[in-house]
Length: 421
Image 1 (tube, rainbow, N blue to C red):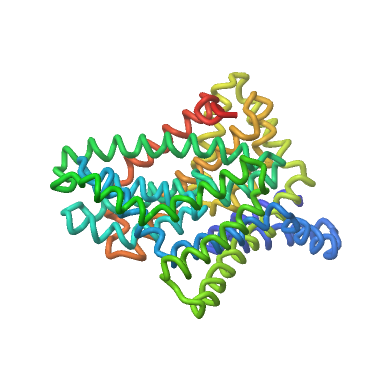
Image 2: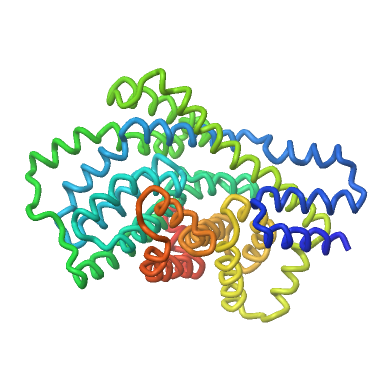
């Protein structure tokens, strides 16, 4: 009965368009109250879900991303990439993709990457006669790599919920992020040749490349400091996030001078709002997951999936289809907190490591960010630029298929994510 109340109330709230954080929290609360659970235990569980040293990395990475965004990092990264590859077929689209990969390495958020790069590259692509729908699809998809290439907030959330190594997830994320980026660039170049999207008329000189590199060197050093510090054992991911904040503040305020000290309160406020949203989702989703565990719903789902077939390949395919479908309707952070405890035991029983399955989940979130009806990245690019969602959806189907291909590769070929572990 409690399971029916939990899942039934959740589906009803989702159907009425209630934000996912409230859907998980309210449905869990109703189910727990009906089951006779003291409200004090509910409060303790919500607090315990967010009482983690590792989760402190989230507000720090949120803040560091905003500091770098306000500090003009995106412009310098774009200028450097443009001088390096802007002359190839589809140059502006290729630049957008690589710039998203670089900015993802300092942002940790897909929508943050889309907003930072899209606001600059969408006008540039339109000026070069790119179809606006295609341009929006490129940035929406490339922006999703912001959660694949570390630092990645979803990876931190998954690591906390499943007890996986953040450093190992980050290492695997670099590999999968590069594979995804290369696949997108290959398609973009083929598509651009067919549509006549040319690159820059002339190749830049060595001097121009050197000038752009010097201008962007401090921006490029940030991911080196973050990841080098973690892998070198100098600090934890949480400490790395704090160092990134300090670095972003010094570079943006005193070196690039893109914002003033008077702008810092606004930057902190925006970061705090974003952090509060994420942490609230983690807290309520954790409560939902806790109640599912009490009701043994994960065990029932695992038993049901395993009873369908004994084929390892078929079971993994069923899980992937389930992840992709759910990912189109559910916000990524809630998706991780709820589904990881459900499916990780099945994945490990099938021979996937926690790190490999973590990358499977993160890639499936990337697919969800570019797939209707949720499609956060698509709505983000439509919100910051004059392009209709219908135009983006029309052009994004090949990109969705590419990311699903990457998802299959990560799920069935361990070396695609575990090569350097």
